[in-house]
Image 1 (tube, rainbow, N blue to C red):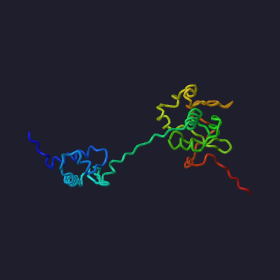
Image 2 (cartoon, rainbow, N blue to C red):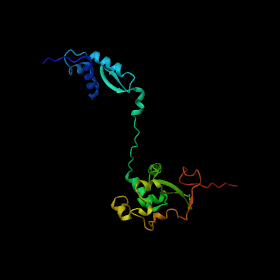
Image 3 (cartoon, rainbow, N blue to C red):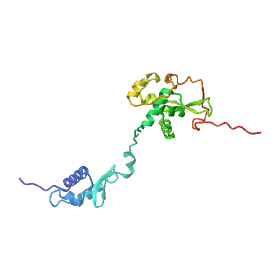
Image 4 (tube, one colour):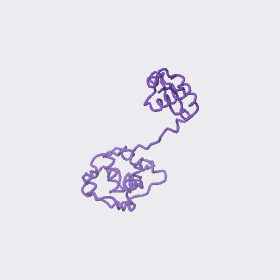
Length: 220
């Protein structure tokens, strides 16, 4: 049987297939090794480059190697915005659990339950993620800010309300309340988070303010 050498269109098809399937750019020599001897690789590449010019995919040369790539003006379509999940540290989880069960509570009360000082960054992170909100100010010296859980806390943990919070024993079993509660510090019902009579609501614009207020008395 007489075998005819592939014509230039068939060579072009084969070069196109090789470039499309290659994991990286291919040189003319690498392409030629996969084609019949004497194949016009340069002619095929030139024809393909002309054919794909101005299309969504173009043929380009990088360091004497050829590859298909997305047209530069369409690169914006290839970007993908992804929301990277943020993991809470053990300190942040403990703080969130304390706020959930003791709300409304102050920073000092959180530190009293945890037994260690609380970095400002921990509360800032919980506020930034929307799990915690500033609720009001205690009617005590310094008028410290109180913290409570926000709606996103319920949404994230699939709770319909604060009544669905697991019991303290379950939280301790999960390692979230492995803490020593000080004597005389009662664990309040989180469902009563809005009934604190010793608290005043924050004023407009005060949500981003400091955690305590100072009263200045003028001297006569």
